[in-house]
Amino acid sequence: MTSKVVLACKDCGSRNYSTVTNTASKKERLEIKKFCKICNTHTLHKETK
Ligand SMILES: [Zn+2]
Image (cartoon, rainbow, N blue to C red):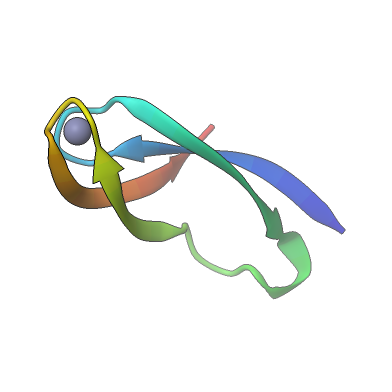
């Protein structure tokens, strides 16, 4: 079973990415380092709803 999550930049709050996650193996909120074009650098992106 999977669910869709939106990833938002931790620095500027911009929602740049969406991904699917396996809910069965998921315990905590995702935190992924990705490139933010607003910040123009790699920042930590957190799961939002
Ligand atoms: Zn950003």
